[in-house]
Image (cartoon, rainbow, N blue to C red; front, top):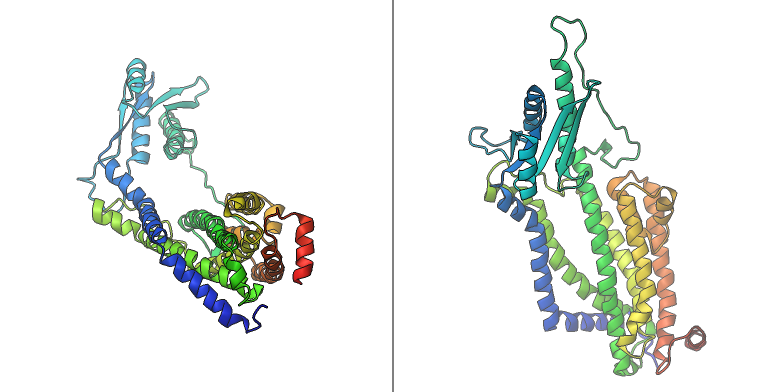
Length: 439
């Protein structure tokens, strides 16, 4: 006969036991230390790359049949690529790029040997248009290719200006202004974000969504495995006589989930601290001028609070389903089959959030941000990079809370039914019959 004591005392005892057993395990401690070290290495990787790359001088050759045009190309490209960063002494600062004018044959030979990072062929067409072709091992969207595309525009402007007749009354070429007026840009206290903050929000959005997805999959399976292990060892039969299925389910989700979140915080917090002070660390190791802008410059307390709300509600929703699923298998080995549909749901939410972070999706993104179980991923992505109205956020959180409440009731009945299913595959008919008996 299940105990009818209040929920909290029995659920609390179960949760504390589960948390203590998990945290004290040697595998838990070892994996936490290893994962924490990996997270710190990832956070420090940009500084390491800059450290080993700081003495590297990238060579780019410029070839042209017109010597004057080639020299103008060198002047413009040097200005674009070799501008000294703030905080350094221009007299002692080493330029990262070396630009040289050479012949086509010499440039081709050096490029084939790997001595050149790129070859810019600059020619003037009969129409007067400057044609620039960049040969490089990198793709067209690489940062260097995009910078040199800007340089190509400057070369064309300089060449056009230099060929104006002396004493001409023709107006000089004026570079056109370009502005982006987005009506869906995230704000901070009513102020539109600047480009650096926008880029930082996009980076943080990817990190937060990936962490949420990994936590749901990894720690959700912890919950399911813990339930399945107790059922296979018949320990559940003893425990179910001292606590109700609702207390058992709540204790499992809270205890094992708390152990997983403890490990998650131990891994994530040091990495976030390193990211926050990445520029200061880089300047302390490499000297001034090596800072590239902290990747979490756009992070605010409200964003952290929003991430915490969606993380806890999203994890709670999936953990309840994982716990109910674990009670339906007789062996932990069978969990992979039942976990696949739930993993696919999380993958859909994750991929939708990634699309939202890239600025795509349209109506589907907006709808998915309100629909559990996708909303923890998608609404989290929306608040990072776009303007979300307060009522939208309230509706999304409200629907997610309601979904957690409904799922907890359904999961409790599934958990109680799953305890009765030994030695058989949990088909739909068997579950419905067992659920009726459990009710």
